[in-house]
Length: 83
Image 1: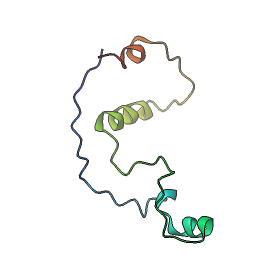
Image 2: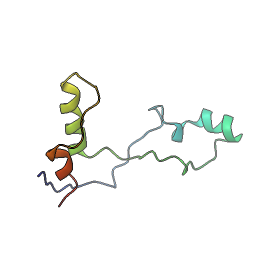
Image 3: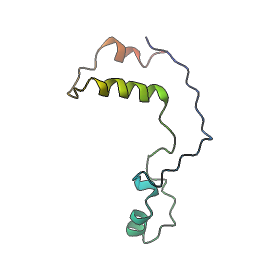
């Protein structure tokens, strides 16, 4: 079973305006709503860095270089949600 404590800095500001995020794309907002003065709360797109354990796990999986369908009922997966 994997257990970790995650510390997170919610005060860190990340500028997403140049990351192709629809949420902060003024051209998209202007076209869609005829104004770019919109607070795009309808988009579930976080403005925070992804937690480091998630980044590390994705990098490890991507390094395997095989992206097919995997069986999810393995102990590591089933134990990941337990405390």
